[in-house]
Length: 235
Image 1 (cartoon, rainbow, N blue to C red):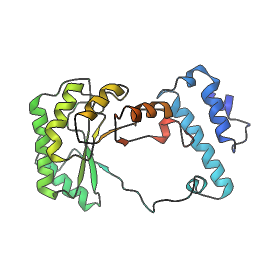
Image 2: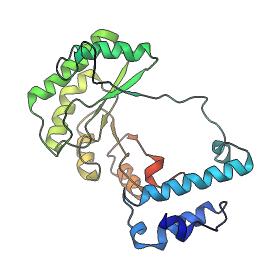
Image 3: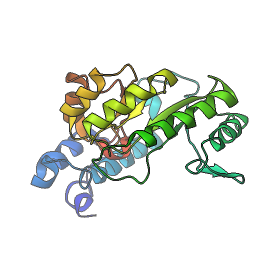
């Protein structure tokens, strides 16, 4: 509210870029972006685009160059189990969940196989082997028809992330998301250099400057920007 009162109320909503620059450069807190400040800027930016779209009676994609795809592929978060049990208690349950996901029309999903989320930490070999059993169950149930990504919420040490990637490569995961803390881009680049599994990151990064580092250092192949957090449509 303070941000809107200071930089937005009474301004021309068509001056989206000017308002964005004023917000970003007008206060010290916002010149040092974070997941505390930047989502507020993102929300205001998306609201301005929405106002302009309604004023022009056009969807926002037409204001940005027009529709490119009729639809986009989405992925599901793998449920923890079925009425038969939980995946983290019995890896065979993963196959049943995979069948269920495909029956619902999904072609890709993601699983966090190393709970609870904390870190950075080393993953013992038995946990890595258990992750392999989960993937074996999925492949036995649905073959390669369901892509499966690995998420870790950045909780692994660099050594452990490389070890996990090495063990899981034969299962061809869709991606390995945030194998280490996402702000530690140099270490993420080390992991990326040691595996053929695509590294995914970006949901906790903000502004083009942090994404530029991710790309320059070849730390990730799949960029997961969150428009509601990284600076909005304009950024």
